[in-house]
Length: 185
Image (tube, rainbow, N blue to C red; front, side, top):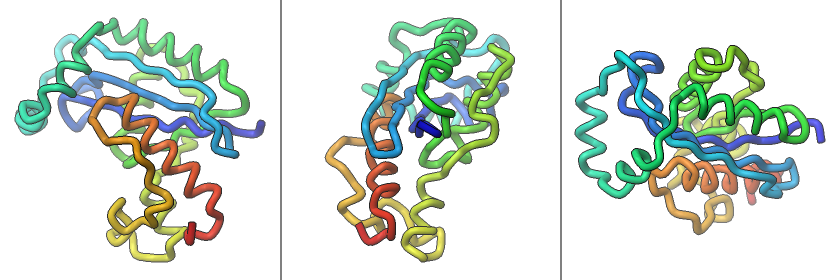
């Protein structure tokens, strides 16, 4: 297999990697044909010296179940990212990062991988699902959110703000888009 699509979702306590902490990471690896190959999930301890963003924490106050889920069984970031790196390296083909939105999730994953393992097997191979929808639908970017996507792309999996749940939801959506070919699923 040439490449594996690694749908990834993270939860954080602010918008800037390093200044704020990644609280949780979930990834679901998919073959190009759409088969779910494996999953990875970890909750991370906050970074020493990092501060939580007040606006992000105000939002978390409205998400009690998701907050509790991402604070359960936390691991040292070096341990979690070491496990993540080993998991990525064990996947078939080269990993391609996939997210919705990748502009938020990828910088955190990139920073954490380099900070704690010294490696990033993704390189700069990252796909943003909304941008991919824009290309398939041939519409302006701001008109390509989930509400504008063909219902055949959207699955039954809920968006829970639990990283692994959202990685699975977004990954299934991406492989449906990938295999639709034209955007007219």
